[in-house]
Length: 219
Ligand SMILES: Nc1ncnc2c1ncn2[C@@H]1O[C@H](COP(=O)(O)OP(=O)(O)OP(=O)(O)O)[C@@H](O)[C@H]1O
Image (cartoon, rainbow, N blue to C red; front, side):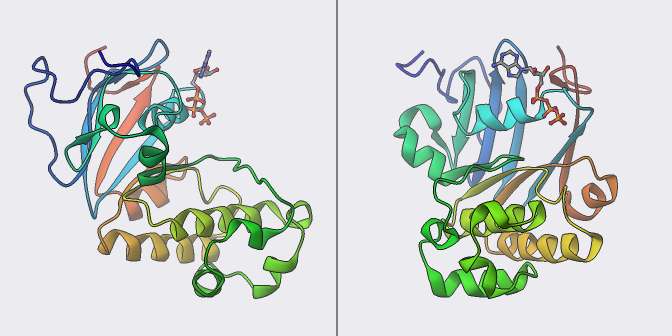
C-alpha cells in the first residue's frame, strides 16, 4: 500500500503484464464494486453497459482516482499511485453524466478559444453558445460543451459517463465521429452507455456490469 491507499499495479499478486500503452486495471476495487481487471490500449474504446445502479459510475470514479480504491490502475505503465493526483486526473479525465460548471460564462472554461470553435462545429454547436450563460443552455448543449472542454485538455484516457444521453441521433453520430477521430490519434476511451446501438458502433472492447462486477469475472 502507498500513502494514497492504492496497491501498485506492479504488485506481484497480479501476474498479467501491464498494457504498455494505455489504461490497465488490476484488481481495482472498493467496498461497492470490483475487482476489475481489464486493459484498454490507446486508440481503443471500452464500452461498459449495465443496469442503473450496477456500479458503472463507481468504476469510472475509481479509475479517475476520485473515489477511494484498492488495487491498481496505470496509464502507459505508470501507476496512478506514482503520479500526483492532479496530474493523473488531467491525464485520465472523467466526464460525469452531469458535469459541473464553475462560472456562468462558457468561455471561462475553455483554455483555447480558437480550438474551441473548431470543436463546436464538429459537435453541431453554434459559436453563439460561447456567449450564452451556462444556466440558459439546454442539457444537450451543456453535455457537448463539457465534452469540448474535456477534449481541449487532450487527456490520454477519457472516461465518459453517458455523454450522449440528451442528444438526438444525428448529433450523437457527430459526437461519436469526433471520439473516433481522437481514438485514431491515440486516446483510450472508457464509455458508459445505456444505448446498445451506440455500444455496437463504438466498442473495440465490451464489458457488461451487474451488481458491481463485470459479468463473467469472479466475484
Ligand atoms: N460512496 C458511496 N457510498 C455508498 N453507496 C455508493 C457510493 N457510491 C456509489 N454507491 C452506490 O453504488 C451503486 C452503484 O452506483 P453507480 O452510480 O455506479 O451506478 P451506475 O451503474 O452508474 O447507475 P446509472 O446507470 O443509474 O448511472 C448505487 O447503488 C450507489 O448508490
